[in-house]
Image (tube, rainbow, N blue to C red):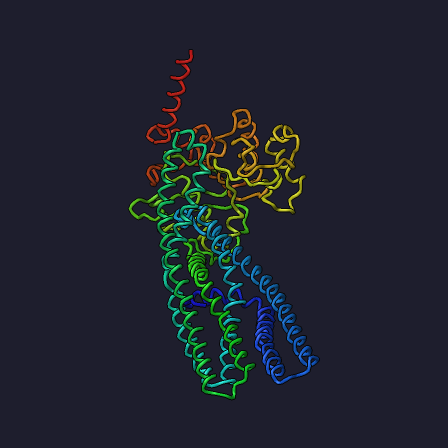
Length: 590
């Protein structure tokens, strides 16, 4: 209505409206029908007044009254159907937008999610799209119908009396101009308010998620103080927004009052100067003016809401138009079962070029072999795994799989060929079966039990009375960290990946279960290319190759046995230090 859409926003709306052309055409027809009934029915009032003044019989007047009543009822039926169609179309469109925004957010690279918290994304997906839902309803029922109604009423008044038509036209044009100017007043403040509101919700979401650490480290007071500071800033912005909206609404009401006063004054002057206007005609003009005030008042009332919608539309458009650093233009599929991995001078940073997470990483891992990845915390081990899985792409260098740049492969095909088990496992509300299969209905219980059997986890699953039907609470609150990792192992091997990445995958599993799992893993890792990230040297010593990272650089790479036997190697020194430490501990215990 009183919002200015740029080309990108118009394209945004067109994409989603275009799929509902038939319903939109039907909607337009009902809007036109509603306007026609609203304009035509007052003519019966004019006839009723003029004929009653002329002494018409009661039966004739009753016929006119019943016709007016029938048209009024018919218009209400049309409005009900109109609201039903609008609600149906609006929900279909906004739900499609919700799905698209969620899909985009899930597929965006890590640099995007490093800048936007989960709470902020929830506010955008639910809050902003909810405001857009209101906009879609307003646009259909208010914007189009109101503007058509104004034009129609002005034309009708022109046909009744040209002088009165000129007065009404000038008044409406002036009023609409003022309202349109006021409609853009404060839109920037509203955008700031929505942005700060999303940021505050994101802050609160993170703190509630980390409530155990906050309580354990006695950081409740600081958290509340930080939250209070954000609320104060949000209150100041909200107060500015409310002041600007109140200004718009009050000026709008003043404009409407002026329009009505000018119209009534003009109507009185014209009546004094013209004797050919009947009482019915004068009432008809007055009635049409009351109809004209309805859309104008609606526009004033909707100005503030549409400003919120405009800000939400801008934010949604920005979100959907974000250019991910992970390109999805590859079309090749991974068909080979044996995959060789090669890194050539790969460098990567998370937004700060001066502080690179990886610098000039180069190594080659033959197909169906295992690589042990060592390094201190922050050396870049997990970043290397993320690059291989294309959760993010390197700024320099290349990663190839069987000689082909991994960007040439379809992202789905590439990620389907890989399985990851990390120390941070995401579990979702549902059954144990749902969390293992990730909601894939085609996976049978027999397939799950065969994998559990191969992983030597029969004792674990048999210890759960409900079995695969066990309900998992949100975030896996009713499971231990070790059980979550066992679910992750089962989840990964159900996919049968060609490349397996284990990132501290057994850090939360008890020693007895880990020993059983190690034997099973030794069998399952055969004929797969595996990367094992671990701090324990006992795990790395079983691998074919070892890569040692230091501050994002390759400190050492080679065959594990060769490095272990080389007294000059860093890996050999680590083993010596580890054995010395174990020996010292045994002496202390003795």
